[in-house]
Length: 210
View (cartoon, one colour):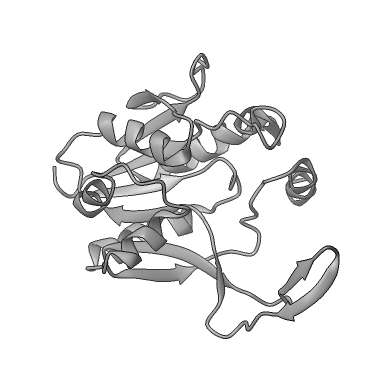
């Protein structure tokens, strides 16, 4: 049905920068990917999971599986390929945000159903941001209108599919859609919805869930 919401859990990364498969690291007795799949199952109609080549799935049942590529955009297109064409809204979720609350999943979907082409959770940028070269501060960047964008994010399925038809390699999907003239709105994020990019980040997230 056109109003069906499919989550695509993008767990296809190979951990080249992290040093191992980050999505399989443990948090509060479950893997990071398990937390994300569970949240997607609670809030979306169907769930597609993208995993690295050679990695099997033994977690909660999902509705479709796909093999990731060399870049997140390739993994996303692998996920799009296993999602039925009649899906209306797509939620892109990332195990690197294992503490994403169900509220965020629900609110980005509601924003798209209300007419937006995409919706992303954001939190204010409160710290000073500076540009540094060779360990020396060279500039302080303005914070006005700047936010930190989190995951999960929701998009109209037809808009996202069209944006990826030419196999781009965007840094971020909401930015790609905005650059193409689509309307991407924001919903309140959550400061606790931390991005696990390093082992130090994982240690912080583990302390939060003790």
